[in-house]
Image (cartoon, rainbow, N blue to C red; front, side, top):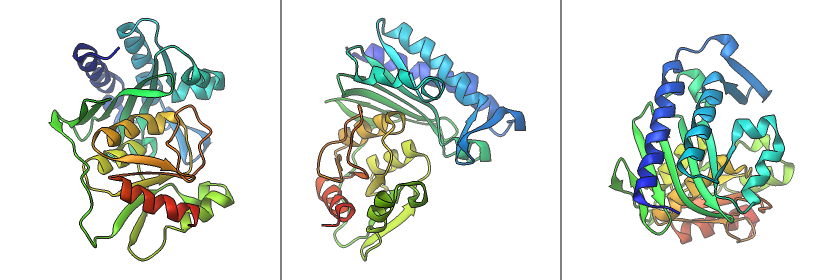
Length: 271
């Protein structure tokens, strides 16, 4: 299903969507072009909607018979999400990951696209247009950033474990308690920004791990494969691999190597 021609064509489609729908609106948004979905921390803009529509048309054209699960389409019709659990190839799309940063004029946002089938991720694209960074991962073929191989590596012996986490205030009491267990000596915790860019930081060895308390696939699919192909791994709180179809024990951890992930997972589980 994945050949180099398709990989390159998807990269081109992602770049075209960003050039047509996102970057012309960066730092140019009018007040009426930003809408709260569930509150001030859950925003959507005309750029999100335009980019998702652009990508939906382009991606299904590139792979006939495929379907798209995009954040904005699911917001409009939650039943769309069920396609992730189906048999058809599915594109998982977050048109603007880090919408709050985008609205604020911060360049730390990205477009995320992943291709999956049967709950297995096949390829992913993480594009930060304002930073001119494109990360691509293909299952079994490794990961690259702007065409150069990505390796997460392992942290230096004795160095603190740096972990970006979801905001504990927007979790269940049990998940909040789990995240707060990371506040121990030797672990440096900070709130996450764009999930896609936090995954990229892990894949390039700038961050040891991430720990998230939500499982919506468009935030995680691209980054999970990127980290895995860069040498990292993931585990849910109970030690299972993350499933893009859902039903994961939360929070879950993704890190540079198995040792880091097990340390973070153990803290989350209270072991």
